[in-house]
Length: 86
Image 1: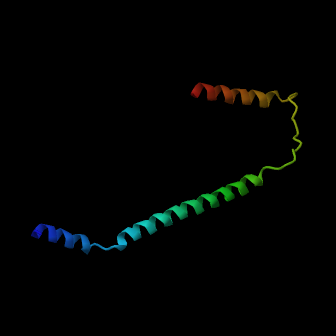
Image 2 (image 1 turned 180 degrees about the vertical axis):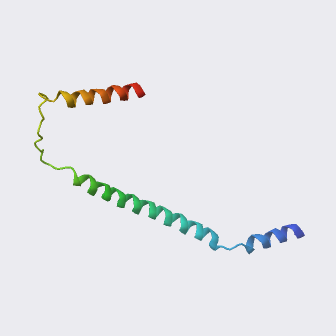
Protein backbone atom coordinates (compact mmCIF):
# COMPACT_ATOMS: atom_id res chain seq x y z
CA UNK A 1 0.00 0.00 0.00
CA UNK A 2 1.15 3.50 -0.69
CA UNK A 3 1.68 6.21 1.88
CA UNK A 4 -1.36 8.18 0.62
CA UNK A 5 -3.67 5.22 1.11
CA UNK A 6 -2.50 4.59 4.68
CA UNK A 7 -2.77 8.26 5.70
CA UNK A 8 -6.34 8.57 4.38
CA UNK A 9 -7.23 5.41 6.29
CA UNK A 10 -5.90 6.93 9.50
CA UNK A 11 -7.91 10.12 8.90
CA UNK A 12 -11.10 8.15 8.40
CA UNK A 13 -10.60 6.24 11.66
CA UNK A 14 -9.67 9.43 13.54
CA UNK A 15 -13.23 10.74 13.19
CA UNK A 16 -15.59 10.13 16.07
CA UNK A 17 -18.14 7.36 15.49
CA UNK A 18 -20.53 9.25 17.79
CA UNK A 19 -20.98 12.16 15.37
CA UNK A 20 -23.60 10.26 13.40
CA UNK A 21 -25.36 9.26 16.61
CA UNK A 22 -25.36 12.87 17.81
CA UNK A 23 -26.89 14.04 14.54
CA UNK A 24 -29.54 11.30 14.70
CA UNK A 25 -30.36 12.08 18.33
CA UNK A 26 -30.65 15.81 17.52
CA UNK A 27 -32.95 15.07 14.57
CA UNK A 28 -35.15 12.80 16.71
CA UNK A 29 -35.35 15.44 19.46
CA UNK A 30 -36.40 18.09 16.93
CA UNK A 31 -39.03 15.75 15.50
CA UNK A 32 -40.41 14.90 18.95
CA UNK A 33 -40.47 18.60 19.87
CA UNK A 34 -42.42 19.46 16.71
CA UNK A 35 -44.98 16.71 17.29
CA UNK A 36 -45.47 17.63 20.97
CA UNK A 37 -45.69 21.34 20.17
CA UNK A 38 -48.23 20.70 17.40
CA UNK A 39 -50.45 18.59 19.65
CA UNK A 40 -50.19 21.14 22.48
CA UNK A 41 -51.09 24.00 20.12
CA UNK A 42 -54.03 22.04 18.72
CA UNK A 43 -55.53 21.46 22.16
CA UNK A 44 -54.88 25.05 23.23
CA UNK A 45 -56.58 26.34 20.06
CA UNK A 46 -59.54 24.02 20.66
CA UNK A 47 -59.89 25.37 24.23
CA UNK A 48 -59.83 28.98 23.00
CA UNK A 49 -62.44 28.32 20.30
CA UNK A 50 -64.64 26.55 22.84
CA UNK A 51 -64.78 29.74 24.94
CA UNK A 52 -66.93 31.62 22.43
CA UNK A 53 -68.87 28.78 20.81
CA UNK A 54 -71.73 26.81 22.27
CA UNK A 55 -73.95 23.92 21.31
CA UNK A 56 -77.19 25.86 21.72
CA UNK A 57 -78.04 28.92 19.64
CA UNK A 58 -78.49 32.24 21.42
CA UNK A 59 -81.30 34.64 20.74
CA UNK A 60 -80.05 37.97 19.44
CA UNK A 61 -81.89 41.22 19.70
CA UNK A 62 -82.55 42.76 16.30
CA UNK A 63 -82.55 46.54 16.42
CA UNK A 64 -85.19 48.46 14.53
CA UNK A 65 -84.16 50.82 11.74
CA UNK A 66 -86.98 53.26 12.26
CA UNK A 67 -86.07 56.63 13.85
CA UNK A 68 -82.32 56.05 13.39
CA UNK A 69 -81.68 58.16 10.31
CA UNK A 70 -78.74 60.02 11.87
CA UNK A 71 -76.89 56.81 12.72
CA UNK A 72 -77.62 55.37 9.28
CA UNK A 73 -76.34 58.54 7.58
CA UNK A 74 -73.08 58.38 9.59
CA UNK A 75 -72.69 54.73 8.61
CA UNK A 76 -73.30 55.53 4.95
CA UNK A 77 -70.72 58.35 5.07
CA UNK A 78 -68.13 56.03 6.61
CA UNK A 79 -68.76 53.41 3.94
CA UNK A 80 -68.52 55.95 1.13
CA UNK A 81 -65.29 57.40 2.48
CA UNK A 82 -63.82 53.90 2.84
CA UNK A 83 -64.78 53.09 -0.76
CA UNK A 84 -63.14 56.27 -2.00
CA UNK A 85 -59.85 55.48 -0.22
CA UNK A 86 -59.45 52.12 -1.92
